[in-house]
Length: 195
Picture 1 (cartoon, rainbow, N blue to C red):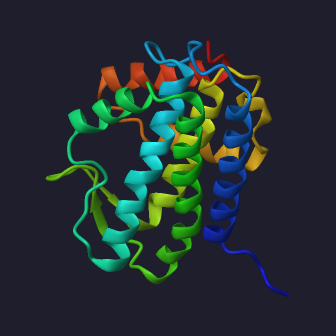
Picture 2: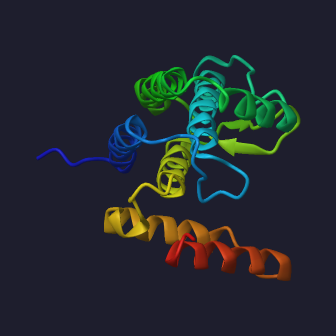
């Protein structure tokens, strides 16, 4: 009997949630506000497109030693999102859909890479381990699908994935830092009621 590996499970979830976001975005008025303060739904779709584009660069960095970073800088990342959010809706949807599909196709390449290989978000860091890239994408897809405010909530996430997200949130908390604890509580409260 063939058992599904943990990475295969995550890759299947990335493909599933990519399709779900694409389906949700297809009929949305992207000019409406999202649950992310200051961002419209178009900003969310633009962010997901550029996130996929950046993660594709990190797959190449991990697998081909390309030396690429996810983004050239934080300022460039923010400017790209703002610019793309102004695209005509069908063009924006196509950009995000194409980048998401390209990432879904590329992520399995990581099976041949060192999972502990460090790749950079921007030049000089912070860094991520290559083996964490699929989980990072899955988290972005789920949280930002909720942020679209289009009828999808955390209650719609598969229970095993919801537990995984919960464990990730808890694991990211620096319990020695009161500000970090406050941020974590805010995120957890948002998970109960994203509004």
